[in-house]
Length: 219
Image 1 (cartoon, helix red, strand yellow):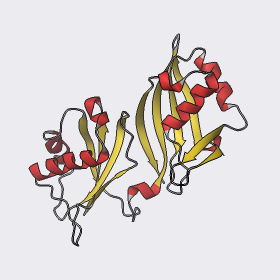
Image 2 (cartoon, helix red, strand yellow):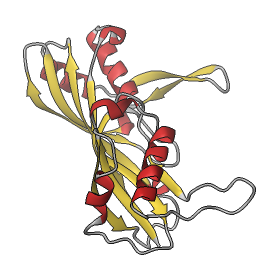
Image 3 (spheres, one colour):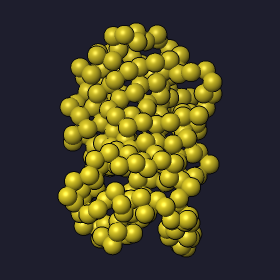
C-alpha cells in the first residue's frame, strides 16, 4: 500500500537537508512499526520520496512524503504516533492513501507551489510590486553550471499569482504562486525575489526575506 504524509517544517528543522530528513522519518517509522518496503538489488533503499524538496532555510506547511509499506496504516492514530518520535520543528499533519490516479511519484504531477513571503528593506512595496508585475516581460539571466553558459529567460509566465497581504513602513507580506511543473517550467522563490529586489534597486545579498511554502498544487 502506498501512503502520503503531509507535514510541516519549522524552527531549526528548516536547516536540515532532505536526505537527513529521510533518515529522521525512517527512525520514526521504526519506532512506530511503520516499516517501509525496500527496493531489491545490491543496495536496497526504502521506497519513499519527497515531492519538491525545499532549499535550506525555507519554512513549510506543505511537505509531502510518499512511502510504500506492506502493513496497513491506521490513518487516525499514525500521525500522533509519528509526532511522538519526531524532533521539534517537524509535525505530521495528516496521512492518507496515495490516490490511484498518481501512478508515478507525486513530483511528476506538481503544477505549482504557493508561498508566503515577508520582504524587508522594500519601501512603497505595493506600488512597486504592481509595477514589477505589470511589465510586459520580466527577464532574468539563468546560469547553467553543467554547460557553463548564461541564458536570458522571461519569468513572468512562471509567476501564476501575486498579491500583497499587508504592508508596513519598509516591509511587505505577499502571497505568490510559482510554476513548478515536471517539464522544467520551474521558478523557485529565491529567483523570484532576486528579480524583484533588483527591480527595486535593493541589494538582494543584504536582504533577509522569510519564505514559507503554504501549499503544493498537483494536477
